[in-house]
Length: 396
Ligand SMILES: Cc1ncc(COP(=O)(O)O)c(C=O)c1O
Image 1 (cartoon, rainbow, N blue to C red):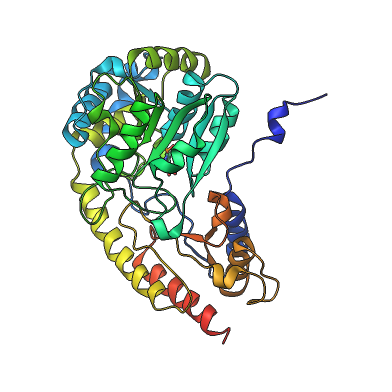
Image 2: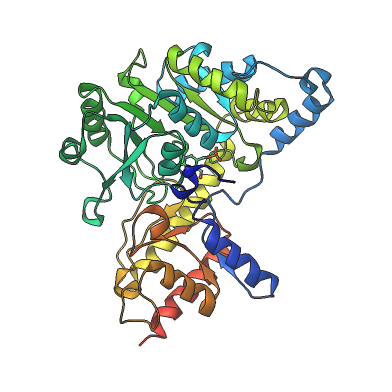
């Protein structure tokens, strides 16, 4: 019996291979330090837990609820979207999903026809191309350079645009690079999308995690009717709530109605308890986020300093999310370390020999780099980066 042809097109989440290997080594008692985490290392705020305990006792939360989300949560999403992003929407523009990831897949399924092309800046978060393929579309990679701070420009978009171009994926701050576009840079890209009648899927999961200056404005600010813009957001990163699985889509009602139809057959409503958790997080503001940010920034600065002191490593001093994306091509190319020919080999070497786990750039479409998450304790960060430095010094 045959399974779907799609099986030949999509790959599992690429961050898994190294984290599985790291887990096996840990189980063997090895002192592994992981730089792979795509989630804050802080607990979910206590007030969220308290509100959830109360919600669990309320029997109305034990039953199905509306597919698009609980009214109290949608009201908070409307309020905070205006407060933080300057977007004027109402509840009909919101669909609550099982995390930002689910929101992205549902969005692509809602707007793509077979063969439609989606422009994806590279290095990219590993889910985008796969979600496009699952939805019948074709990912078109917009490759960026270290020298351009991994930022796309409109000349590249012009060169790649065809009659099938339907969507541009936009994520600032970026996973995996941590790069944040300036307002002026973002505006040029938005104008291009508006003028070329291309959807912008704006992934704003990291909007609150910016350490110097401001985050880029949402394209929705310039597109009041949400003609071209679809925003993806959620509570995972800013409130340390990755396991609660709550994200959402903000779009015009035509898109939301289609997304609602799909979700009604896929999952129905998101768990009511998780929705109450997300409501509590939004209602209580950003104080806890600010505290996390202080720690992230301290670690970011430390990591930047450590990498900058290592010979032949180049680094963009990224100001967003909790990632750095150093250029390790000198060491990951053939001829410097025996048996190492790319950044997957290099990451395996670092893990096997020094017990430090990074995600290789290939996972994000960019050989010669690695993703370093600084969402780990200060002690582990210090120890792990000292080992990295030792690894390089040992080569001399
Ligand atoms: C850029 C980006 N978008 C969306 C998500 C999805 O977040 P979640 O599904 O946990 O809400 C992630 C998670 O790693 C991410 O890095």
